[in-house]
Length: 94
Image (cartoon, rainbow, N blue to C red; front, side, top):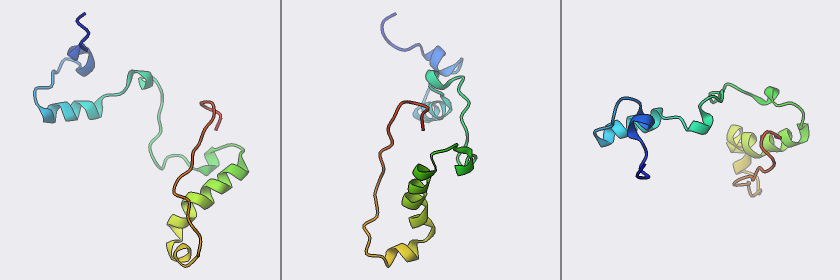
């Protein structure tokens, strides 16, 4: 109750004794807010898994996929490529 985190609770029964141990534990640690949330692996989902929003999907594909897929074409165009995209909205709304 001194304000410090309970190491046994954070790391299970093993208490990290070195920097390397701490690095291993932190990699395997899952935030409490995500403990029972099923997450997918990269490459597991595709555009066909996204329902609706066809116009938005088209803009995302043209902005991010095309320059990566066709770099020789985009290097010859006098276009300034977008460097990022801000996605916003309520969680779970797309």
